[in-house]
Image (cartoon, rainbow, N blue to C red; front, side):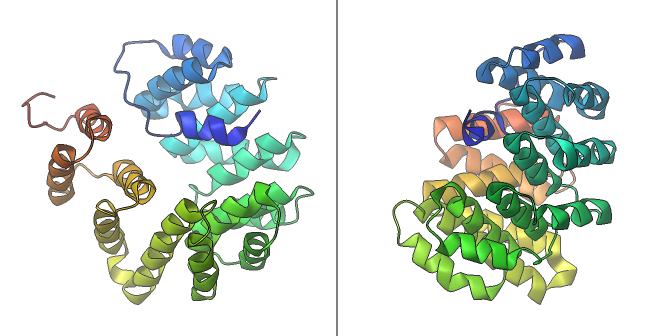
Length: 287
């Protein structure tokens, strides 16, 4: 199973289903193991928020690794701290590399001392993929402990970790990584990942210069990136804006409504549905 296919297919921004499925019905969809049906069940549980946490945690004990990975993605999206210990347990004890890989990646969304400590130990995981994604997750925490691992992997010949390593250098945000990312940007095989990583590095550096304005700086940079000529960069910016969106931020709300007019039909629908899901009026005057 290719974990990247699963992550790309169902991670975070599937359009809201907006159905009245019960938690148990959504859980059963995830248990099918079918990526499409899993995605539908996951979106339903994400929409239920903290109410769905116990069900998602229980799925971590399922025998099927696809189910465990999908459950962790849901827990990472809802970001309730009750999920931290169960995910840490998967990273520390699961024998399946893909499950440990997913656990390390999801822990990047939980910036706590406990998560960071476990991720630092994961830098010594027996599997190289897990080491590199742990470096990336630590970078999301503002921790550069995994820089050397990410740099070596980004410059190496192991294509199974190169893209994750490039992403990690962006999150770590150390200027030492910029020449590596610029070089990777000139390679057709890593151009998109490097382009996104350079934008992320720029965000990190800007926040370091203006730490008191961290949130607003990040939003400003994401808004700029939304109009990037590289569609991968603009989609990354859109994904992050929708994840970080705050209903109290009227300026960003208006910006996204305007963006919905200018994006492709698919992207516009994603923006509009996410705004509606949060109870925010769209241009059609609906909720």
